[in-house]
Amino acid sequence: MSVIHDRQNIESDDFMCPIFVYAILFLNLFQSCQLNNNIAYNIPDPDCTGAFNLCVDADKERLGREAIKAIHEQMDDDKDGMIEASESNDFIKEELESNTDSIRHRQFQDANLQITFHDLWTQWDKSAVYNWSNDDVIHWLVNHVHLPIYVENFRRNQIDGRMIPRLAANQKHYLSAVMQIRDPRHKRRLVIKATDVVLFGPPKHIHNLIKDIILMSALLVSFGACLYAFVRHRKTQESMKLMLKELETLQKAEGNLKAVAGKIKAMENELKDKTKVDRSVLKSWFIEVQRTKEIAEKYRQRRGSTVDHANQLQLALKEIEQLRIALHQAEEQAQYQTYEPPSELIDLLKRTYHVEEIAFEAKRKTAESAMLTAKEQMIKISKMQRGFFGAVRIAHTGCMDNISELINAAKQRLTNVQDEYEERERRWNRIAALLDREDLISYSSSSSASSSGNQYLSGSPQLSSNNGITNNLLPGDYFCKRS
Image: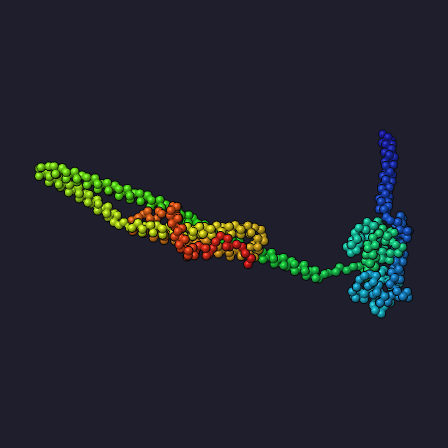
């Protein structure tokens, strides 16, 4: 059994070994494919000796020296192997198209120093740009050169800091032939930016103080505006609460005015009923007096036809009693109606009452119009204050002051109308009582009375100005105006 078991283990080991071998071969093949995918799409560089014409470290060192030498020769106008300060200054202004600051120029070259190729190479070799990785170069390409469309070209050719001098020198049309940059403007920009970092080092982050000041000022102004809007919003809300309270008092005054109108109606109806009752009482008294007189007349006739003196005396006493009753009733009637004013006076009083009634009605309508105008303005302000900045809009208008004046004027008008009505009713009721003519104040809105009232109004042109109807507030006089 042990032999069989060992044999099975050996067979299983023999079966597993090819599987491990095939797995290792597959992984190696997959890694090689991945490597080929990474470099298969690079643009061949004939000056590089690596696989797929990629530059190895030796190629980057050699080609970098050649590019630095080309830049040195380009800056050396007199070809004496030395770069003077004037030559470097002219090169910076003409080739780099930049009036670089004097600090950077002094860092690159002193006035009494002449730069050889070896000095320029040593300066480049010590620069931080020399040690840039491919990611650093791509970051520089995107954020400083502003040519992100060529990121893939730089990544596929594995451009690092040591190859930037080749971009600056652009020997053998390197940018167009290898880097596939066809646009002349893009090539010019890339050459200028590459030369700048080769000569002066990595670009410095320029801190723009003016922009910071502008930004801080904008933030402060925005904060101040928001704070101002908040304060105005709070004040407007408080003012609106006060306005609403005043509007409630205005509505109460409106209710009082309606009650006054109802009271006028009720009193007119009561006076009409009272007049009817008084006339019916007078008529009943007159009938009673006539009946008593008729009874006395019957006693007189019977007394004349009677011969007996006792009967005549008794009938005479009854006749006297009936006449006394009739006289007493006549005295009561005379006491109840002691004076009958002239008809002309009654007509003039009725016309006067009607003229006052027209003026009072005009004042009442004006007060109602002022009240409606106040309500409309309150609705407008309520719509304007919607939103956070609604208070700012209200603050820059005269709405709050105008609505306050409007409400106070409407309240004053309603109060005046109510006071005038009460005084007018007391006065005319007293006149009607003294003249015993309750129908005096029932002469109101008939067609004949209206025509007579208009006749009196036409003969009195100063009435409207005296009553103050058109001199003060009318609906539409108050609107939100710019303060």
